[in-house]
Length: 170
Length: 157
Image 1 (tube, rainbow over the protein chains, first blue to last red):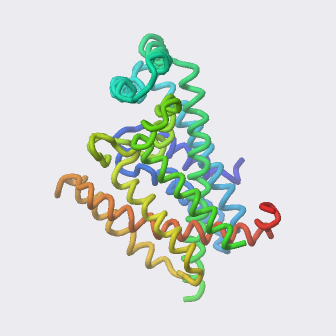
Image 2 (cartoon, each protein chain N blue to C red):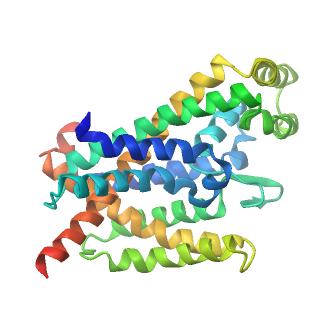
Image 3 (cartoon, chains in turn orange, cyan):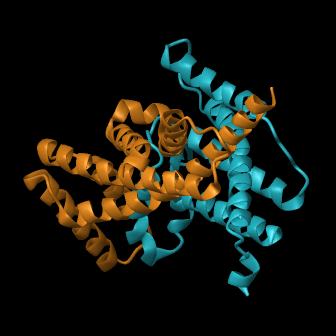
């Protein structure tokens, strides 16, 4: 665990930034890859080992950063939703409803889709929690954050290896 | 092996780009409209999807903001270049900083109120960063595959 402490710290940071609206709008899709890069960078700093980073290590750090970001992001999102009884799906529900109404669907299907979504929205606005919503965002976060974490880890590895190579040549 | 990897990467980026334009083509495929909120939330994980910053054509919006669209478009262009050329070699980080600088300057300038958010500037600066980042990702992936003595040929055939 101690070995991957930098991934834990950066994953936590990314998880928090993912749900803070203002912070999110600045870095957007770069949050997780940058967190994975920082995890590798901090690991190098803390261990003092500036040898070329093996790609396997970069992938593990990226993956763990993504997993931690997904877990913390989902947990924080659930807590915020529980307290505020508001979240993205509630906010975009009127827009979604309008969009679905405009689609050339059968009346039955349109009704089913809107009923499913409004059941989730009702649960969130009344109790602040929807099991279906929580599970879906956890799965979403785990898939997307780990993929972007691995991508960030591999990009970070290239950047750090290039940098360390240049420093050792000088 | 490298050609297959390049093709897979290109297809993957193309698929991801197609997802960004879900609202444009989903209306043609009636039954899967139920997936729209979930597709939207997948992209919501990687983009704030601020309605003032997304690109809108004929009232239909992309699922990511202009900057993210630029980043992924850059990745797509880079994947095409990597697919058709094999000899690109970047050994220093200078190019990365040169390509990242316009985006950093743009974000800093509009955040500090020097000018208001400009979709074209966001798209172009994102495109530059996305193209170089995809190259780094490709190099990292090839290094991963060769480090692990991983033969894609064996997996695919």
